[in-house]
Length: 107
Image 1 (spheres, helix red, strand yellow):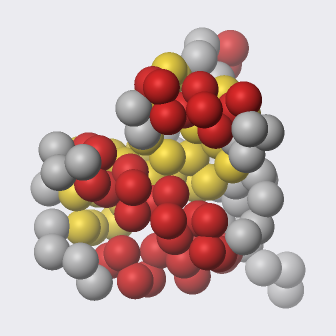
Image 2 (cartoon, rainbow, N blue to C red):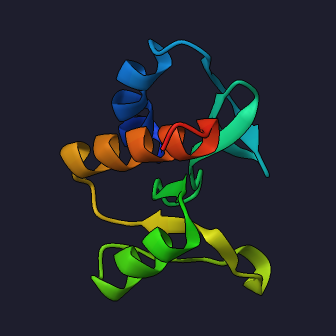
């Protein structure tokens, strides 16, 4: 049986789920992580790509560096969200941790 697209996200998310206030959930049908109820990281359930919420300037920086792409479901760009296609566990863990801090107001 083929691995589900979100398997890589699930593997990287394990460490974050051990953090206080972090819980799993869904956002627009995508698996996601929340901190105290607020979304901070998600995974496109069709492609397995990472989606994280970061300050707008940081999103633009990641896009300019070709690390990420705009997150634009149904053609509407979410300016504080970036989509990362590559499967680099270290990068994903760092971006997910950065997003957790941003959303929790601790950045």
